[in-house]
Image (cartoon, rainbow, N blue to C red; front, top):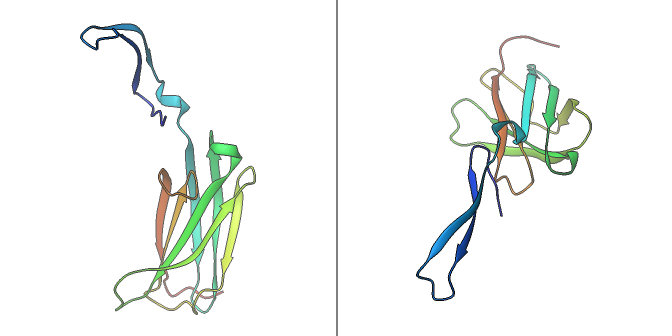
Amino acid sequence: MDVKPSETLRLIWQSPNGRTEAILAAYDVPTDVAPTASIGSVDIRAGQTWVKINNIQFSRVNNGTVYVVVEESRRNRVGRDVVSESDFSTNGGDLTVSGLDTITRGYRIKVTVYETDSKSTQLSTTHRASGISRP
């Protein structure tokens, strides 16, 4: 059963013939029990083949692990390429993703944090475009 914050759970009794029902108990799921995540910033610099995702923070996630997906796109191109998909299971912090094409102007990165690798619950996302800064 997938329980969501602000949802009401009900324990319902139903007669054997299915014609009568009664609510025996109800419980409102609090809003502050949901998993959360945030991304501090993304460093993307022209001439590099890596990006640094700074200050990933999360709480109340399954097994203390989140799933981070990094996607890239470039100017004058349709669509995104998934560069990296990985579990991130520390108490939060920084993550460096390498293996990108050389970053140029118009290069864009999208970082998304999910609760699990099934990608059913998105917790945070951020976009960052390259400028003219050099390392």
